[in-house]
Image 1 (spheres, each protein chain N blue to C red):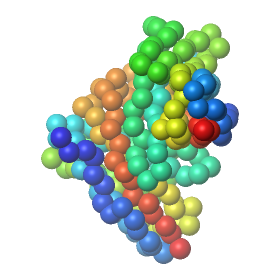
Image 2: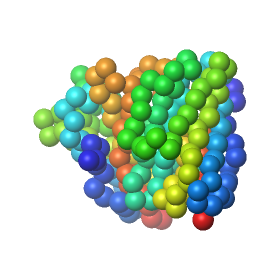
Image 3: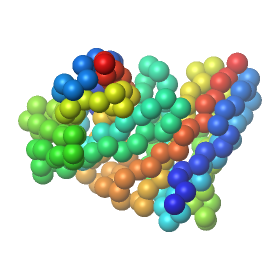
Length: 113
Length: 112
């Protein structure tokens, strides 16, 4: 079956702009989690959506938001971009229970100039 | 605060020898632990997990050991192969919490 897909794969934005990233989970998976990966901080949890509801949230400012649609596809939005938002943004899908394996997409690499 | 710590940013091991990757955690509520492997330009892939009711879990060349009293886990790869060169992330989650916390990763280099 098809894996997790993320679009776009690469993105260049300037400070102050906003960006929307998209994630399509594996068919049948209802949970989508978003992570930010930077060289110094590793993988940091942003938030998790399950059945269109945000179930968990990490310690990121309100500029980072997300949503999930009825088909489980998820979007992540970052408003008022800062240079420090340059990172690889990964999404992962699973059936929903924490013991279920999370499957990651290839990520969207965002560069903020 | 870093609840999951991988103190070695990188590790080099000779092909055929044992690779041991270490991970420490601070949250005593963590009861489920995972290891992920990541190649460049790809998302992490699940490798192996362990529940706190066990102290060892084995899957082929990969074994994870958990020492709850020391809040320490390790991943052993035997024998190490060139394809094992990647970044390895340790991760954990706690009772009643579906959130998974990742460490910063350890880059493993398998030397020919």
